[in-house]
Length: 351
Ligand SMILES: [Zn+2]
Image (cartoon, rainbow, N blue to C red; front, side, top):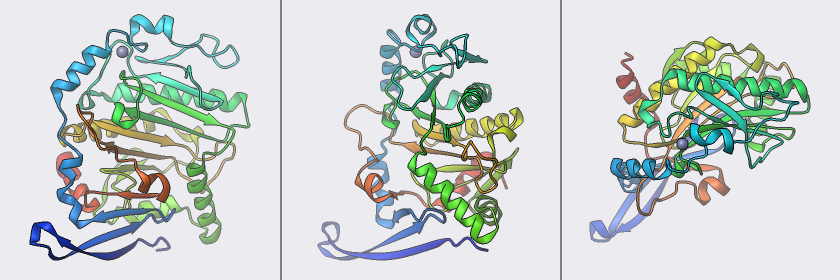
């Protein structure tokens, strides 16, 4: 196998106040991302600190915030008609794109030349993490993909596109009402450029597609969960955040994705969200990203990733985005990926 999964170990020595200041050895595992070289750092000592940082969600607080934010919400049906922006004629003459319950419109505060917001369901101010349905997710993703296809047809200078979700404030959302965002730019976002250019290098060097090889390698590992439609689901060897689950699609290009692919993807996302709810996690980010749009390439597969963020709770919350991920491209992981995969399979009823 051309892909190498590398792990390094370091030992720290500490005179611990919990052990009368006797020397304690702490083992730290570094896992290297097999494509990018980023580190996932799994310190054995931190498994006990996890519960301090990730406090259990306070349901009463969440309910209170749902109620408070529902009075003047721009994304609720009553206000959306007058508050949300509209696409120009050149993009979508009807102004807003609808699919199922989802409604899509341009981001009022655009941060790329094409950026939109998709409200999953304007008729429901808040959908709890365990209450999303496959239809709700599939319609929003299909709506976003329609937008990407429209933009791609009218502007051949756009390069990368992705659809992402920040769910709740601790995951970076400024608006309570659940929504997704689509961003397209003529410039390549650096991380997407890094993974696609490294995939291209791998393809040229080995005459193999990195992602197809990774699926083959991981299918034999404890981290592999299951295949649903064209997506292969696994816990990454080197997660980029806590409880990350990755879906690697066999398909390489946006135009080859069909409704069945998205329906299968959405069903798995809903299973994962229910799993997170069961694990008492209430905030998450996800991203569905596509390779370079302009070319019919064979080296990059459509990719999906989802991970948890600190629970949305009252009082001070420790943010898990700090200097290590921000500047060192390394991620502190409080769980063992293999153990997490075993838990997922148990919950999903996979033998
Ligand atoms: Zn609302």
